[in-house]
Length: 68
Image: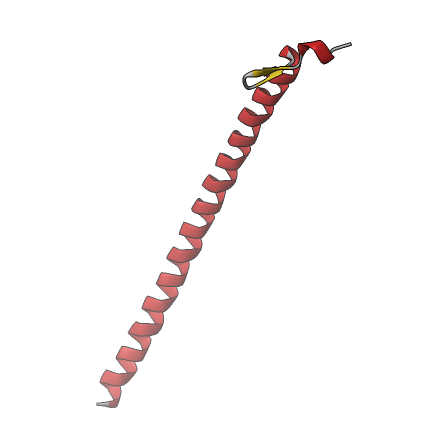
């Protein structure tokens, strides 16, 4: 009986370590994907705002009369 229990304890530890390794891998992949997505969204937002500033308009309101 002790041998079976020892084998189960070893199996649970191995499964737990494998699960932890899988979680680290998934977390790393998710973090990389998420950060890349935020960077891309930031670049798109920045380009859009810069274009609006250059044109002198934001949305439906025109600010061209404020340009020097």
